[in-house]
Amino acid sequence: MKIGTIVHRVVSCSSTNDLAKKKAEKGVAEGTVIIAEEQTKGKGTKGRNWYSAKNMGLYASAILYPENPDISLLPLMAGLAVKEAIAESLSVSVGLRWPNDLLWEEKKLGGILCESDFVGNRLNYVILGIGLNLYHDPEDFPEEIRPLAASLKMVTDLEINEERLLRSLWKSLSRWYRLFSQGQSIKIAHSYERNSLLRPGQKLKLENEKGEFTGVYRGIDQRGGLILEEKGIRKSYFSAQIKAIIHA
Image (spheres, rainbow, N blue to C red):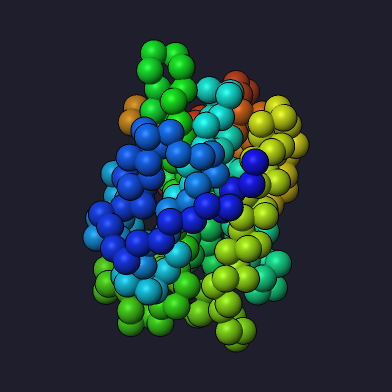
């Protein structure tokens, strides 16, 4: 199965993830991709909005039907694929911030949003959403996010060939998804750990719905969880946000 063999392009939609869900419910082929020129209600993680101006970014969603219902590695897998595709097509090395973000010098360049549908314990489908800022100048971002956002145009002198970038992305996504489907979870986790901006031994502050947690980062486990050691006890976090790297 190759992701991106079938691509549906639309001028505008609320979000490519929402449109992909409707197609997944109809049983379209695995690997089908939806791409929009703009999203009127683009979605980020934790219910946030994703700024999706027309013809400024890549707004894409891939439809997947994994056999393994433990899908917590998929955002990490997708991050690796996007990083790889950018390096291959533009010779730009971007950073990965667990679990969903692509960064350039601490500014957000892109993000991953995985959404799934279960019936009981049975996984129906996964929508793998990718948002990537391509052509923005700094003034193209809303003022409130301008200090925090970047685009590929802002970080490279090369002309952005979107079709070349997409070819690289479909190839990388297909390869990493094949590894996921083959149960190569440890390989994916270790690859993400090596490519992450975090380094084992750093002190982190995490936040989730239960509060804030501080501890020492000990890597990524084989399910994609961030391992934090607190008072000698190691625990994996799956739904959390890195609030700060604490420097001694």
